[in-house]
Image (tube, rainbow, N blue to C red; front, side, top):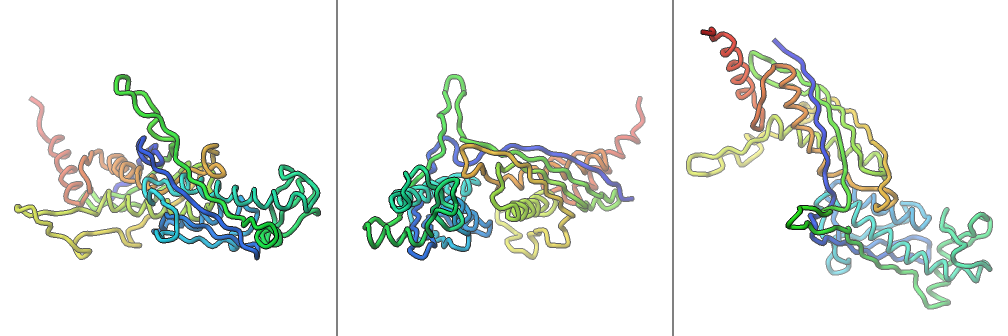
Amino acid sequence: MKRRGRGIACMWYPIGFTVTANPSAATVKINEDGTAIVLTGTVETGQGSLTVLGQIAAEELGIATDDVHVVSGDTDATPMDAGAIASRTTYVTGNAVRLAAGKAKSILFEIAAPLLGVRADQLDARDRKIQVKGFPQRGLPIGEVAHHAQAVMGQPAIGSASWNPPTVAMDPETGQGKPFSTYVYATQIAEVEVDDETGEVEVLRIVAAHDCGTAINPMLVEGQVEGGISMGVGFALHEQMLFDDGGRLINPNLTNYLVPTSLDMPEIEVAIVESFDPTGPFGAKGVGEPTSVPTAAAILNAIHDATGVRITSLPATPDKVLAAIRAKAARKTIPHS
C-alpha cells in the first residue's frame, strides 16, 4: 500500500567564512564606447555568478548588462578572490564589484561636472548617460565622457576596490561574537509517497521558500534552488559510498553510485522571500549551498508522517525504510504481559 506524507524543515545559513578574513577584489574599467570591463578572480561553476556580477556593475554604472564584459579566474590579469565557496560570491565579490564600479563612475562625474556646469554630487548615471539629477535631458553619453577622461584629461575611468565581510571574533570566555556578517533563511516542505511493501520512497512535490536578500536575478535564484533540491533528493534517498572490509570504495562510478535523474525529480515550487540586507550589493545576500540544507530533513519528516517511522541515517534507501516499517509492525504485535 502506498502512503502519503508531508514534512517541513527550516534552516538558517551563514554567508562567507567563519570569522576568518575572506576578501574579494575587483577592477572595473569604463571604455570609450560606453561599455565596461569587470576583472574578478572568482570563477563560474554554473551558478550564474558572472551574470550577477555583470548586473551589479551595470546597475552601478547606469548601463545595460549586455554592455559589461566580465573577465574572471585569470590569475595573470585579475585581482584576488577568496573563492566561489561559502555561498559568498554575490555578497562579497558583488560588494567589491559595486565599490570598484563606483570609483570608476566617480571619475566620470568629476570629468562631466564642468562640461555640464554642475557639481559632481549633482550627477547621476543611468540610461547610458551621465546626467543631472532631476534633469535627465541635461546629460552626456557615458562613452563620450569616458573618451574625454582618457583622451583629453588623461584620467582613464578605472576603479579598483576590495571588500571583506565585517565580523567579530568569538570571545573564548563567553562564546559571544559575530562570526558571520549576514545569514540567509529558508523553509522547504516535501510531499512523498511511501510503498510500505517495498520501502520505496517517491518525492512528489517540494515547495521551497528562500530568503536571499534582494534577488538580483530571480531566474538564477530559482535555478539555484532547483539544483540544490536535486542534490538534497540524492542526499536523502540515493547517494551512498560503500566500502569493503578493507576500506576500499566499491562503488566509485555512476553505475552504482546513484544520483537523481530527471525522472527522480519532484514537482518544485520556488518562493523567493524578498528582503533587503543593507550590507549587501543592492540588498543581496546569497543562495547557493543553503538550497540543499533543508531538503533531506523535509523528506525524512515526510516519510515519518506517511509511515510513522524515523529514519536516522542517510540515505533512506528502500531496505532501511522497509526494515523500519517491519520493526514497527513487529512491536505492535508483541503481546503485553
